[in-house]
Image 1 (cartoon, helix red, strand yellow):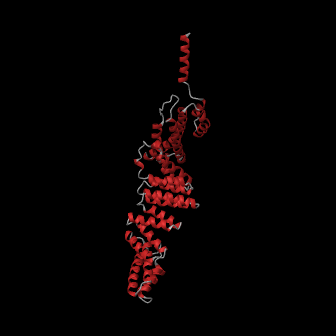
Image 2 (cartoon, one colour):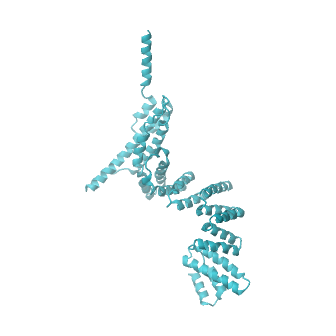
Image 3 (cartoon, rainbow, N blue to C red):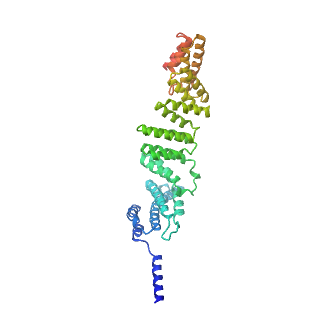
Length: 407
């Protein structure tokens, strides 16, 4: 009897150890269609036996998505061969969107698969089965998303651009792919992230836009443009004072992280100016100038702050320094000329006035040289007034300045 009982126990243990897949898993694995399998997985996930079954089910969806990808990439490879062999007429049509959607689905399902693949199985052990293979095969085809996103942009398919470029950037940030070689895409990932951010902003998805801009900012060639557009997007999303104050706090954090970044400084200064918080604005700018004496943004904004306060002497002081820090800015030269003209008009005698007028004319002439069509700075009338104050109405130089104003 004892021997019989032992055999029975061994039979039960064996049956448990070699139990087949659950019905819930079998239903998913039988499906040959990605869409159908996805629906079945959604309906049956809760009935699966353990984490290992869930990982296996998600991996089946990765397989189905990659089958779709391979169908299209196989046709592309055949077409390339046909062209190389001098038979371009033998090229076959393929579906680029099916290729891109397959890659996106494979990425999404592989990440989900890995969540369960990294959890303990029924025996309490962590024994991942799918991570390495899935990461490698998806990473190999993932760059197709860049070209297909570009094609979507040319076709005016904004949703497609955001989907495909967004998936490319998101997957590059996904820890699941951290072991893959990211070096090959360093030359263009920042640009893709920047434009993905712009499309996310157009779609009114500010969270995604900010995420993509942060990626773009790692690329030195994209950083300035990404920061500019990020701040523009954030400003344009403000609805009330609470949003404004929250944005200022974000800018403060960005400024603390990159105090030398004039774009961020300029954005924070503009927010203080909009709130008419002159004390905070003055403190920000003067503290920044103390640390970075040649900061064009700080010097120019401090000068413009003085101009808005009708303090021509203070304005000229800071704008002179700004023009030295960045001599090719027509706007600064124009405001500097205006401040000097005011000082000339209020001078105690003709000698002092003429000295200021000469400085003002030099500033306006520099603005004219840099921006002859007045596209950025409207130097025309103020320049004429400076010539008028210095030389009188009938002097040929004044008449020429009047003509310059009209052209």
